[in-house]
Image (cartoon, rainbow, N blue to C red; front, side):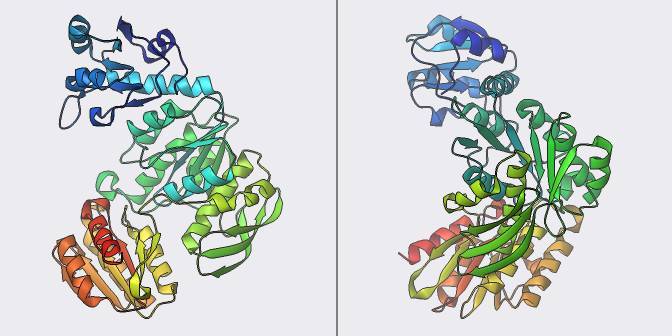
Length: 450
């Protein structure tokens, strides 16, 4: 619940109250009128497909606490309104939403962790949410854009002791924009890789865009970064911020680790001493993600012993390496939320390490790679073969660049072919960019296993 008076809420949003309602403060903000529930603040602004302000009246009818829209739409609602919803007007409702979120962040007064990176940011966020305390509020799902991040902030309940916010980057200046709203105290960069090359052109430009989160830190802030990442070094040196590194030779690193099916036991060195962690996963890349989360805890002054005691609470967001046991001993690894060259190689390495009769990789397109996309796909295909993957099934025209063993036209065709291919004891990885639609393949396989 956004525990602000309507007058204070309007002040923080830079909005004018045109009609007064009643009831408790709004419980959250939403921008999709189809998701409005009683007690919500609906913010309507022009989008790519429709003007959300058109749906303000419907939001009030659905029981919204109130609406925040452009002045002309607000005035029309004020004149015609029947009911007790608040009507707020702002020239730029999106900017008002962002301003309100920044104001609520200040009202909460707790530390903020911002997480960005080419891969792993959602998993690091998930681990942070579990191990950094009992009253941690983290971004849900993919609420990590100029719209999603403010909504995530406004979902944080009063009394939150830590906010963990994921920050997506699609171009230069976007991380800086998100940081202006969230004002992070700890800035986490999971890694830097060839993602969004279509927009930024070079890996150096990607590193500079990621480093905007470091540049947003105040003097008392801390950057958590991969050890030895040369692309970030000039940005860290220029900003001169306190830094905690993770990974091999880092401040937070693995001393010893043993894995078994679904679990990792690791002795981890930190500036606060060594601590043993029992982690509920066996993927090597998630062990690196855990190091980033532990380093974040160290930056916040959290005892590694306390973090270790909370590891049973770790769960990952859907579609990110989710393991599903199908019939006949078949294992499905559903990792189809997104894909890029770094995450593809990590997922294939994990598939290669899974005990199985055969290992099948169902690979869709990796989007936004620019002119070098074909080469990146070819390299991933070579990596799959070098890792010992038995069958690579490409999905979609762009997947032909993997040089797959077989190529399916679309997800439906891939699902149909898999029904013929699968044998008892197989392990199947399904991975591609979200635009490839491979969740349909995973859903078909899951349904076949019921």
